[in-house]
Image 1 (cartoon, helix red, strand yellow):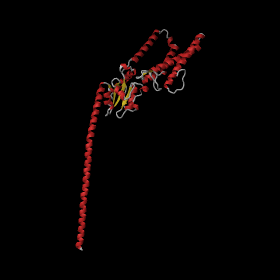
Image 2 (cartoon, one colour; image 1 turned 90 degrees about the vertical axis):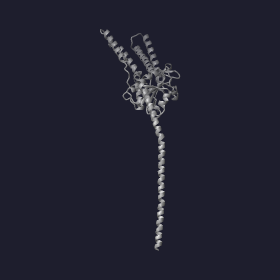
Image 3 (tube, rainbow, N blue to C red; image 1 turned 60 degrees about the horizontal axis):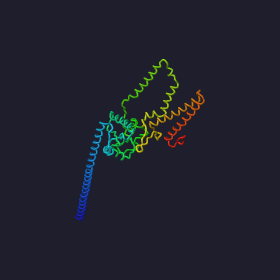
Image 4 (tube, rainbow, N blue to C red; image 1 turned 180 degrees about the horizontal axis):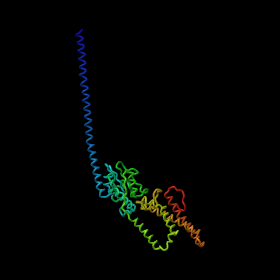
Length: 361
């Protein structure tokens, strides 16, 4: 009995030992397989990281070369002239961590784009203000594409008018707001600077070259007035002439009501010439903008209405004979009717859908 019990215990001990011996190799095999798997994943990651790191380094080198090239050109000229190849390589192609404001224009004499020349002057003032500013960085560059030097760029962008200003941001494609509303804002350097600040967060303080024409004209005017006062110093009754002061006040009012101050602030073009048809528009089609020629036309029309009203007043209050007074009355009515009708037609052309008209539509 004792021997059988000992045999049973020994057999159980041996079976338990064999069971333990069988489990230990299985756990070691699992750990070894896990190590091999982790090593494989590490090798794969390292193999993938190599080309990615090399590509990233190559991208940084290309970006550095592009920025260095632009900085070199900007140091020589505030506005960088570009053709199709330069535009595609430096503006369109990535990588790019800078914004480029591009003016698309047509400055050659045979293009006869007077607005392009005026806009170019303001654009140069803005670019030079940024180039010689203490805050100048490589965050924004100013460039220009002339139609005769980069017509392929105009075709690529489906552009059919000039001048046009577009901001190409550092990331992504230009959005709707990145195209400057020239017809609404005008091309004054100050207006362009506000638009650039809105699109790039870069504030540019516009510094214009000194212009002595205004002070010279003011000095000349004061000299003429002083000379007249000196020559008529014995008789200064003309200073109390109501008609003269009324005429001067009327000229000032007509100038202000026609939009001269708006022109001074916004700097709109004189007129707009369609590059395809060659047709020149002197009246802007929107109620939010105007041309310089438009203010002159409105000034003339307001002056005509005013002259008609003056003639009617004189016909009613003067002591002239009846025949002359009738002629003045007819002329006054004709001027008021004619020029008011033209004013109303201009108003209708700018405010589309306005239902009323008088004589002319």
